[in-house]
Image (cartoon, rainbow, N blue to C red; front, side):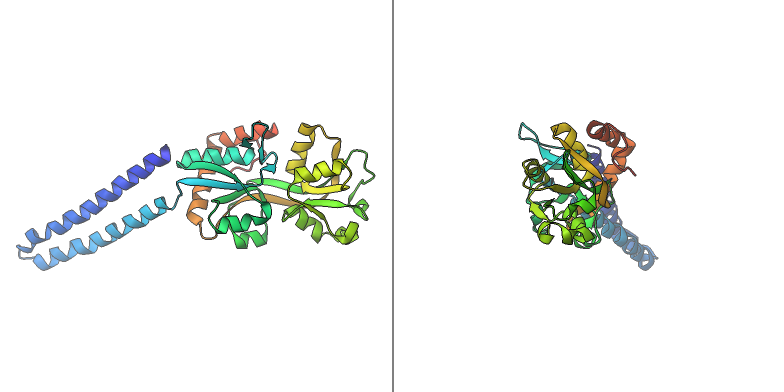
Length: 298
């Protein structure tokens, strides 16, 4: 609502500026009757031009925000974004995005996508952003318009409680799973242990929940995945699984926008800062993680 009022105020201000410029030009004939006509008639033209040219630029910045904010996500990525038993998409990122959209006056929509097609979905304007525990990497910084980081994460190894695997070295000869096109898969591929796991490559899954279910039935021996997901999913599911102390990588989450969408990125970041100052970010963090400082604030 504040954003809408601001837009209305700025629009009204723009109209006032343009009207002032027009008023200056209508006074020219009257002033031309004086003995200093050449001087006074040239001044309104020089001062009116910058004012009238500035107004459209300001309006363009406001128009840059879309009416609908379509968030692309893997809807099997708890607690960041996932489908609950009522078939509703919920999660940390969903709550953050909804709060941002309310502040910016945009309609919100959560759209499940295939994670390995996320870049195509964004670049063809099927989604507005990728906001779903997306790990920030140099490659993604180049491909997308990345926001500042908003959460820290690690790539960890998850095994069954009775597994003989006690550390990363024990993955040799074992079937190790990871999600397709994920930072967990990338971390595993970059690690020296990768060449010694079964088939010398990870067993790839569409999502982590399916990978964990397969590990439970013995179809794989370990899963390399986000610590944020593992530490939420294991306790809430009651599965006899554990996270090993060895880690594959440390990282941060960010929001990806289409390259060049700087106005939208800046608006979302500004809204997040305002939400942090209002205590909303701490509230969302407390709700999902039982601590109010899990989400980075600025």
